[in-house]
Length: 217
Ligand code: B16
Ligand code: MG
Image (cartoon, rainbow, N blue to C red; front, side, top):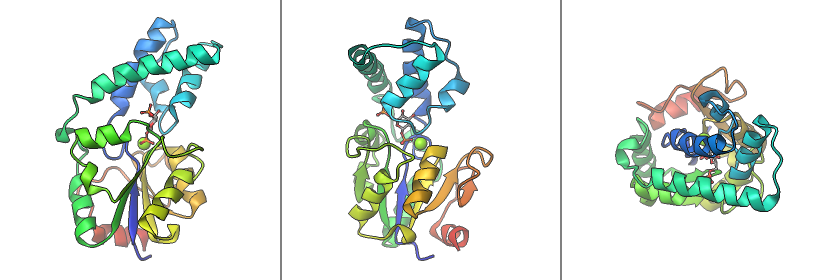
């Protein structure tokens, strides 16, 4: 496969913001007296904010009206934004920046494909924003992963076909999105959770374009 572009998911691939999502959702769940554990938090990987809230409410068998849900999401997001405002480039996951720099040197397009509505602010906080040729996030899409919209828009920005593009994803929903869009889906994390991916690596430590070429064949 000729690699003309790479699309990176953000949470869990570029930075570990899941821990901040957990702190913020946990505050809300405690207020609602809903039991919410780190294992429950894993179920929220890649889900949109509203889908995450719905999942948490279902853990407590709680049904709320839309206005209340909006208020709860705003509250959660304020705390989350406060937590991520303290992030710096030290929180970029191992190997990510070197890989992006190499891809850029070699003329491979680099785009973000995240469900998060906070992607731009986080990329700026960790000083990576300027290295992306395009950013597609929760503000630019109408359908969440596993729909491929987020990645298809990324490929469009890069001006390439999905068949020449690698998607880096840590969530099963994102792997499904990449596969149904016709991308090479590279899972980042636990192979047993990402068994549908075309290939899985535990992290991007030491990843190079040469290794990517070997993986994609
Ligand atoms: P926000 P990704 C996703 O980002 C997270 O994995 C998911 O846990 C979160 O609920 C979602 O973003 C929405 O985030 O509340 O910031 O809009 O993994 O697609 O980069
Ligand atoms: Mg993710």
